Length: 345
Image (cartoon, rainbow, N blue to C red):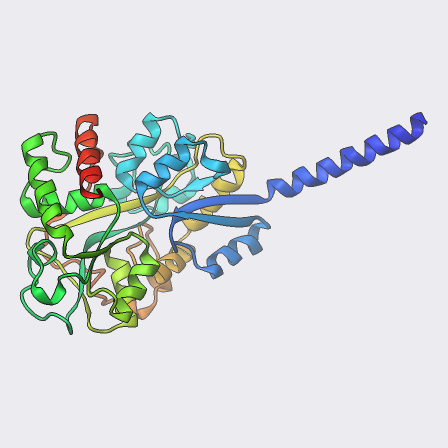
């Protein structure tokens, strides 16, 4: 009897070991919708044996909520730069000091040890770009050198607009248009933002930050104008040639999405391997070829598709004001939350 028990125990132990070994070769990623092409995930799995599962979100606020609720086992997340300090302050990120890794040398100099991660301790730039407006020039060919075309749209575009459903991005763009400082804590200034957005709301068909849906709706003519990111606009133009990305006189917002490891990640070593893999020039070029945004990694040029080399969405005209979004203080966040709640009623 004791031999049988010992044998069963040994079998169970072996089974658990096999199960744990199998579990260790997993990686759970949460990212912006549509950020990974199947080929790059297949390449990583082939090189490492690690199986990647990807979940998605459509705003930084949604990611923050997910991680606050326990992260549901995520090993890698991709927040925008202004949310990295918030996640650090909330103790939602693991420190893994990428600055000490060889791949960190590949990062463009202006994105090494950036203001949102000054020690290079928590984040690695993944992709960056601008946020502006894309519109169908076949539908509207009038003046489009100002955000007024978005916030006080001409008749041709009324009711045919998509706005992001990310409060931070919408409020930043509205503030840029109005000449109000980002992250303002002045109730009077933020009342101007609310008034602008409420007056615009009747002309807005949808509020969505889902890149794939926005592209499809622009291509099909369901909407004719949208807030959009530069690279995503290029992908939309490839579907419909009359789509035009704007560089308004007020400027464009800029963003950097970063690879981070959520606190309590179950597979942190696999996460580090994935981040190192994505930071190699050839793999970073695969990402840029797919997403069409700008890469923060040096040395991607030999691997880029020819179409990216002269794409207007990726080449910011000289003299354009480029404004990186900021990490807002508590007062500004409260005001922004009130504005968004009021707008969405």
